[in-house]
Amino acid sequence: MRSYGDEVVVLRAQQLGEADRILTLFGRERGKIRAVARGVRRTNSKIGGRLEPFAVVDAQLYSKNPDDRSRLETVTQAVTVESFAEAIVADYERYAAANAMVESVDEIIDAEPAALQYALLLQGLRSLTSGERDPLLELDAYLLRSLSLAGWEPSFNECARCGAPGPHARISFAAGGAVCASCAPGCGATLAAHIDTMRLLWALLAGNWRVAEGSDQATRADASRIVKAYVTYHLDRQLKSFTAIDEVWRMRNAGG
Image 1 (spheres, rainbow, N blue to C red):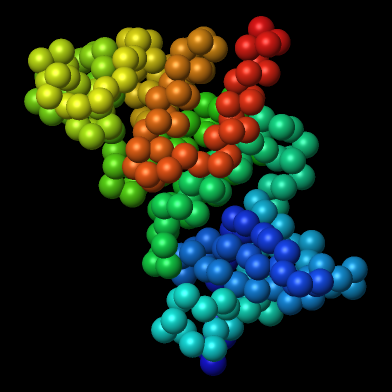
Image 2: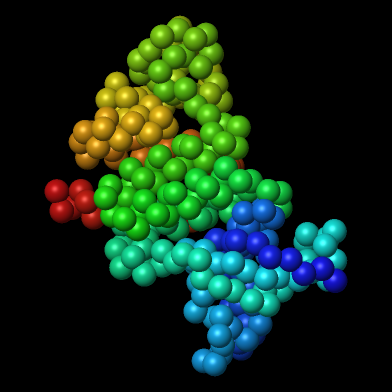
Protein backbone atom coordinates (compact mmCIF):
# COMPACT_ATOMS: atom_id res chain seq x y z
CA MET A 1 0.00 0.00 0.00
CA ARG A 2 1.33 3.47 -0.88
CA SER A 3 0.23 6.84 0.51
CA TYR A 4 1.00 10.09 -1.24
CA GLY A 5 -0.09 13.72 -1.45
CA ASP A 6 -0.98 15.81 -4.47
CA GLU A 7 -2.73 19.08 -5.24
CA VAL A 8 -5.83 18.15 -7.23
CA VAL A 9 -8.79 19.74 -9.00
CA VAL A 10 -12.08 17.92 -8.48
CA LEU A 11 -13.51 17.33 -11.95
CA ARG A 12 -16.49 15.12 -11.17
CA ALA A 13 -18.25 13.58 -8.17
CA GLN A 14 -20.89 10.85 -8.14
CA GLN A 15 -22.70 9.15 -5.30
CA LEU A 16 -21.66 5.70 -4.13
CA GLY A 17 -23.84 3.84 -1.67
CA GLU A 18 -25.36 5.81 1.18
CA ALA A 19 -22.41 7.93 2.27
CA ASP A 20 -19.52 7.72 -0.19
CA ARG A 21 -18.52 9.48 -3.41
CA ILE A 22 -16.48 8.43 -6.40
CA LEU A 23 -14.31 11.32 -7.55
CA THR A 24 -12.48 12.08 -10.75
CA LEU A 25 -9.49 14.23 -9.82
CA PHE A 26 -6.81 15.97 -11.85
CA GLY A 27 -3.56 15.93 -9.90
CA ARG A 28 -0.76 18.39 -10.49
CA GLU A 29 1.83 15.62 -10.12
CA ARG A 30 -0.21 12.48 -10.78
CA GLY A 31 -2.50 13.28 -13.71
CA LYS A 32 -6.02 11.88 -13.68
CA ILE A 33 -7.02 9.97 -10.58
CA ARG A 34 -10.18 8.03 -9.82
CA ALA A 35 -10.72 7.77 -6.10
CA VAL A 36 -13.35 6.98 -3.51
CA ALA A 37 -14.03 9.34 -0.61
CA ARG A 38 -15.68 7.32 2.13
CA GLY A 39 -18.30 8.78 4.44
CA VAL A 40 -18.13 12.25 2.91
CA ARG A 41 -21.90 12.56 2.48
CA ARG A 42 -22.51 12.20 6.18
CA THR A 43 -23.31 15.44 8.00
CA ASN A 44 -20.37 14.97 10.37
CA SER A 45 -17.80 14.51 7.58
CA LYS A 46 -14.86 16.89 7.97
CA ILE A 47 -13.87 16.82 4.31
CA GLY A 48 -17.13 16.31 2.40
CA GLY A 49 -17.63 20.00 1.63
CA ARG A 50 -14.08 20.28 0.32
CA LEU A 51 -14.47 17.60 -2.35
CA GLU A 52 -16.96 19.30 -4.67
CA PRO A 53 -16.45 19.95 -8.41
CA PHE A 54 -14.33 23.05 -9.21
CA ALA A 55 -12.47 22.78 -5.88
CA VAL A 56 -8.68 22.72 -5.64
CA VAL A 57 -7.52 20.69 -2.64
CA ASP A 58 -4.32 19.41 -1.12
CA ALA A 59 -5.28 15.75 -0.93
CA GLN A 60 -3.79 12.73 0.76
CA LEU A 61 -4.55 9.44 -0.99
CA TYR A 62 -3.53 5.83 -0.78
CA SER A 63 -3.46 3.05 -3.32
CA LYS A 64 -3.41 -0.67 -2.61
CA ASN A 65 -1.65 -1.30 -5.89
CA PRO A 66 0.20 1.76 -7.26
CA ASP A 67 0.96 -0.04 -10.53
CA ASP A 68 -2.71 -0.65 -11.33
CA ARG A 69 -4.21 2.71 -12.28
CA SER A 70 -7.56 1.10 -13.12
CA ARG A 71 -8.27 0.58 -9.39
CA LEU A 72 -9.95 3.23 -7.27
CA GLU A 73 -7.62 5.02 -4.91
CA THR A 74 -8.86 6.37 -1.55
CA VAL A 75 -8.92 9.96 -0.32
CA THR A 76 -7.96 10.10 3.34
CA GLN A 77 -7.51 13.85 3.86
CA ALA A 78 -8.36 17.03 1.96
CA VAL A 79 -7.44 20.64 2.69
CA THR A 80 -8.94 23.40 0.55
CA VAL A 81 -6.40 25.34 -1.49
CA GLU A 82 -8.85 27.28 -3.64
CA SER A 83 -12.55 26.86 -4.38
CA PHE A 84 -14.26 28.29 -7.44
CA ALA A 85 -17.63 26.63 -6.90
CA GLU A 86 -19.53 29.46 -5.20
CA ALA A 87 -18.81 32.09 -7.85
CA ILE A 88 -19.27 29.65 -10.72
CA VAL A 89 -22.53 28.08 -9.55
CA ALA A 90 -24.05 31.54 -8.93
CA ASP A 91 -24.03 32.32 -12.67
CA TYR A 92 -25.47 29.93 -15.26
CA GLU A 93 -23.15 31.01 -18.08
CA ARG A 94 -20.06 30.54 -15.91
CA TYR A 95 -21.41 27.21 -14.68
CA ALA A 96 -22.00 25.95 -18.22
CA ALA A 97 -18.53 27.05 -19.32
CA ALA A 98 -16.83 25.51 -16.26
CA ASN A 99 -18.57 22.19 -16.83
CA ALA A 100 -17.33 22.13 -20.41
CA MET A 101 -13.79 22.88 -19.22
CA VAL A 102 -13.66 20.06 -16.69
CA GLU A 103 -15.40 17.58 -19.00
CA SER A 104 -12.97 18.32 -21.82
CA VAL A 105 -9.90 17.93 -19.62
CA ASP A 106 -11.33 14.69 -18.27
CA GLU A 107 -11.44 13.43 -21.87
CA ILE A 108 -8.04 14.78 -22.89
CA ILE A 109 -5.73 13.86 -20.01
CA ASP A 110 -4.86 10.41 -18.78
CA ALA A 111 -3.08 8.93 -15.78
CA GLU A 112 0.18 10.71 -16.58
CA PRO A 113 1.39 14.10 -15.31
CA ALA A 114 0.23 17.04 -17.42
CA ALA A 115 1.59 20.15 -15.70
CA LEU A 116 0.72 22.61 -18.48
CA GLN A 117 -2.84 21.29 -18.75
CA TYR A 118 -3.17 21.60 -14.97
CA ALA A 119 -1.98 25.22 -15.01
CA LEU A 120 -4.27 26.02 -17.93
CA LEU A 121 -7.31 24.60 -16.13
CA LEU A 122 -6.58 26.62 -12.99
CA GLN A 123 -6.17 29.75 -15.09
CA GLY A 124 -9.44 29.07 -16.88
CA LEU A 125 -11.42 28.52 -13.67
CA ARG A 126 -9.91 31.61 -12.04
CA SER A 127 -10.80 33.72 -15.07
CA LEU A 128 -14.38 32.46 -15.01
CA THR A 129 -14.62 33.23 -11.30
CA SER A 130 -13.40 36.80 -11.77
CA GLY A 131 -16.28 37.54 -14.16
CA GLU A 132 -14.15 40.04 -16.08
CA ARG A 133 -14.73 38.50 -19.49
CA ASP A 134 -17.48 36.79 -21.47
CA PRO A 135 -17.60 33.20 -20.09
CA LEU A 136 -18.10 31.76 -23.56
CA LEU A 137 -15.03 33.55 -24.87
CA GLU A 138 -13.12 32.20 -21.86
CA LEU A 139 -14.33 28.70 -22.68
CA ASP A 140 -13.41 28.85 -26.37
CA ALA A 141 -9.95 30.19 -25.55
CA TYR A 142 -9.48 27.40 -23.02
CA LEU A 143 -10.61 24.65 -25.38
CA LEU A 144 -8.37 25.82 -28.23
CA ARG A 145 -5.34 26.02 -25.95
CA SER A 146 -6.04 22.73 -24.21
CA LEU A 147 -6.34 20.85 -27.49
CA SER A 148 -3.20 22.59 -28.73
CA LEU A 149 -1.29 21.31 -25.70
CA ALA A 150 -2.61 17.85 -26.54
CA GLY A 151 -0.99 18.10 -29.98
CA TRP A 152 -3.92 19.42 -32.03
CA GLU A 153 -3.05 23.10 -32.51
CA PRO A 154 -5.00 24.57 -35.42
CA SER A 155 -3.95 27.28 -37.85
CA PHE A 156 -6.41 30.12 -38.33
CA ASN A 157 -4.30 32.28 -40.64
CA GLU A 158 -1.92 30.42 -42.95
CA CYS A 159 -3.25 27.48 -44.93
CA ALA A 160 -2.69 24.37 -42.84
CA ARG A 161 -1.78 22.37 -45.95
CA CYS A 162 0.36 24.60 -48.18
CA GLY A 163 1.18 27.53 -45.87
CA ALA A 164 -0.36 30.19 -48.11
CA PRO A 165 -0.94 33.38 -46.09
CA GLY A 166 -4.52 34.06 -45.03
CA PRO A 167 -7.10 34.92 -44.18
CA HIS A 168 -8.94 31.97 -45.71
CA ALA A 169 -12.66 31.26 -45.83
CA ARG A 170 -12.75 27.54 -44.92
CA ILE A 171 -11.51 25.26 -42.14
CA SER A 172 -10.59 21.60 -42.38
CA PHE A 173 -10.03 19.84 -39.05
CA ALA A 174 -8.42 16.90 -40.85
CA ALA A 175 -5.89 19.25 -42.46
CA GLY A 176 -5.29 21.17 -39.24
CA GLY A 177 -7.17 24.44 -39.61
CA ALA A 178 -7.69 27.10 -42.27
CA VAL A 179 -7.31 25.98 -45.87
CA CYS A 180 -6.95 28.08 -48.98
CA ALA A 181 -9.26 27.88 -51.98
CA SER A 182 -6.77 25.68 -53.85
CA CYS A 183 -6.33 23.14 -51.04
CA ALA A 184 -9.92 23.04 -49.75
CA PRO A 185 -11.30 20.63 -52.41
CA GLY A 186 -8.76 17.97 -51.38
CA CYS A 187 -9.33 18.27 -47.65
CA GLY A 188 -12.63 16.43 -47.30
CA ALA A 189 -15.30 18.06 -45.17
CA THR A 190 -14.74 21.74 -44.47
CA LEU A 191 -16.56 24.49 -42.57
CA ALA A 192 -17.14 28.00 -43.89
CA ALA A 193 -15.85 30.82 -41.69
CA HIS A 194 -16.13 34.59 -42.09
CA ILE A 195 -12.91 36.58 -41.96
CA ASP A 196 -14.01 38.15 -38.64
CA THR A 197 -14.59 34.68 -37.18
CA MET A 198 -11.12 33.56 -38.27
CA ARG A 199 -9.65 36.66 -36.67
CA LEU A 200 -11.47 35.94 -33.41
CA LEU A 201 -10.36 32.29 -33.38
CA TRP A 202 -6.77 33.39 -33.91
CA ALA A 203 -7.08 35.93 -31.08
CA LEU A 204 -8.51 33.37 -28.66
CA LEU A 205 -5.73 30.91 -29.38
CA ALA A 206 -3.06 33.61 -29.14
CA GLY A 207 -4.52 35.19 -25.99
CA ASN A 208 -5.10 38.55 -27.67
CA TRP A 209 -8.02 39.69 -25.51
CA ARG A 210 -8.11 43.19 -27.01
CA VAL A 211 -9.11 41.71 -30.36
CA ALA A 212 -11.34 39.02 -28.83
CA GLU A 213 -13.33 41.43 -26.68
CA GLY A 214 -13.82 43.74 -29.65
CA SER A 215 -15.84 41.08 -31.49
CA ASP A 216 -19.63 41.17 -31.77
CA GLN A 217 -22.05 38.50 -30.55
CA ALA A 218 -22.69 37.06 -34.02
CA THR A 219 -18.97 36.53 -34.58
CA ARG A 220 -18.60 34.97 -31.11
CA ALA A 221 -21.47 32.59 -31.81
CA ASP A 222 -19.90 31.54 -35.11
CA ALA A 223 -16.53 31.00 -33.43
CA SER A 224 -18.21 28.91 -30.73
CA ARG A 225 -19.78 26.74 -33.44
CA ILE A 226 -16.37 26.05 -34.95
CA VAL A 227 -14.65 25.40 -31.61
CA LYS A 228 -17.32 22.88 -30.60
CA ALA A 229 -16.96 21.12 -33.94
CA TYR A 230 -13.16 21.12 -33.55
CA VAL A 231 -13.39 19.56 -30.08
CA THR A 232 -15.93 16.98 -31.26
CA TYR A 233 -13.71 16.00 -34.19
CA HIS A 234 -10.62 15.36 -32.09
CA LEU A 235 -12.34 13.74 -29.12
CA ASP A 236 -14.51 11.67 -31.46
CA ARG A 237 -17.66 12.56 -29.53
CA GLN A 238 -19.64 15.62 -28.50
CA LEU A 239 -19.25 16.71 -24.90
CA LYS A 240 -22.45 16.44 -22.88
CA SER A 241 -21.83 19.91 -21.50
CA PHE A 242 -22.14 21.42 -24.99
CA THR A 243 -25.91 21.07 -24.61
CA ALA A 244 -25.78 23.73 -21.89
CA ILE A 245 -23.54 25.93 -24.03
CA ASP A 246 -26.09 25.75 -26.84
CA GLU A 247 -28.79 26.75 -24.34
CA VAL A 248 -26.75 29.79 -23.29
CA TRP A 249 -26.57 30.90 -26.93
CA ARG A 250 -30.32 30.39 -27.32
CA MET A 251 -30.99 32.54 -24.28
CA ARG A 252 -28.66 35.25 -25.55
CA ASN A 253 -30.32 35.29 -28.94
CA ALA A 254 -33.78 35.41 -27.36
CA GLY A 255 -32.74 38.30 -25.16
CA GLY A 256 -31.03 40.14 -27.96
